[in-house]
Length: 66
Image (cartoon, rainbow, N blue to C red):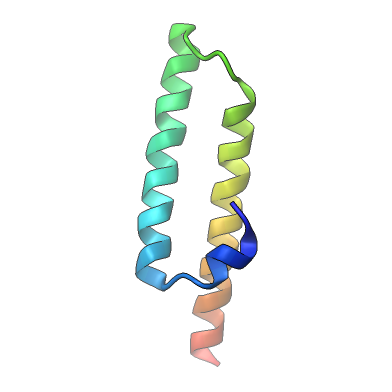
């Protein structure tokens, strides 16, 4: 996920994307606990994507206040 793509999305699209990423992160954690996660690097990638998304959402929120 690229930051430029996120900045072009609306707030509602970002919220939906965040929800999707959190669901995926939950599923990856469950797969890890069960022992069925073949690509463990996806957990770290998901965390970074969520942080990136929250940063863009915060930027948009602050720009709306100004």
